[in-house]
Length: 218
Image (cartoon, rainbow, N blue to C red; front, side, top):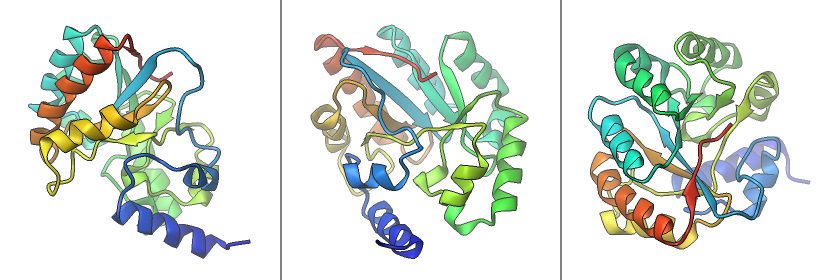
């Protein structure tokens, strides 16, 4: 049976060379986390990491409104503090929010006590029972220490953060891999904005035309 060190090295490999669609064996390593939503209805779950951002987040909200789509925003605490009006707009327009730490910490590289303190600091800005670890990197010991949260991972990565892929590839990553119940990751951040602002409208249009709806995580 592989030990803890083996499992974490395996996940590190997959994070460095990210997988667009999460394989079954990776879900097993962190089986208490949510990777996909159950159900057979045509429902998808868009999520946005690292905001709020003064330009990217309003763009996302405007696009979602065009399609009557709801989403979940995993926010960084310090960004909420700096962009409170945008955060309030997320809530007012019926979307969900989640804790994404206060300073975008890598759980694997952070002592448990410091990690929990940073999440608690973010909780002062973000009232939510949802949590997503930045980079998807969280120790299993940290998962156990965060039982008050529902830890949300993902089914499909758009790859919008990847400067090496084209804008169209970013859209194709989602269109070709998402299916009912999928949790999809985009980023409302400066780094991802060029790819995201091209691909998100295509994804919304495609799946709406196919009869899907977009809901927020609960």
